[in-house]
Length: 381
Image (cartoon, rainbow, N blue to C red; front, side, top):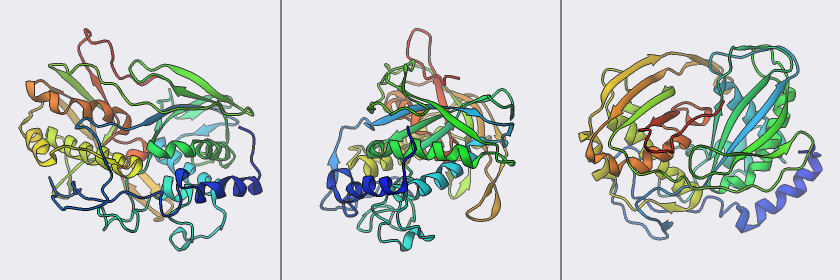
């Protein structure tokens, strides 16, 4: 994608803020209603002006992209680079689209209509019936860095991340890609090693394994993109769940450790996250009995549990402090006839992640199913 002058960005952004189809300030966050509260198993509050209903299976439009970068100099990556990528993306996205240059986004007239605010700040709409006491909703993006062989990259080395974009946030993909172009000049890692965006690919398959197709090379226009809805295979009798990045789920306000972990800890977090992504980013809601599903999840036991706690520390420039971001890694098995009710959510969650810090790549898991079923979720490297 060629560099875009600030004036061009203003002219391009203005229609996005005024066209209702693209997200006007009063329309970009429009859903109301409340059937699921994030701190309760079920909430029966009635509401008018509810979003569209959908089936009991979760349907969320996703865009799945792989971005490849080339280092321009030696880069020393941090312990978990997802946090660095997320911070770099946020700073660059604001630089790319902010037209007022106000330091305090919440005081900005465009706060509820700005692409940066929607994608990265994600405040709840002023008239929402859900998550009213929260300052931010689940973000409509997930950055997942693909594993590198080592944390020190020499010049001309390749770095790759996967970017998942949810629902109507797909309309802002060009801004996101441009933000990653800007990010290369800012640099990553303690020494701020610089890099260049080399290629962008899109997963064009709604089943697995993934099928990647280039949609942009450096200094070339981006081709048209489209979203997909994940298509789970038939539910197996047994599934192996592997946490690849720290899974941070809470029970009664406390992070769940390896010994006390139960399936409902994962599923409660996953159900809440998927329901909120669909509700706020696709203006639909799940037509399911949340209390019943969570009650069923409590009866589903795990076997072959091999989990451990992995600690790591990140620095938050916003809060100017170091933060402990440990979580569970490892695997466990599910092997019961009652797995069917949870299967569509578990399958979709491989893209949405679960738990705290999902937008920076935490809470990623994959499912291993019997070889007789061809579609297995794999991360390409």
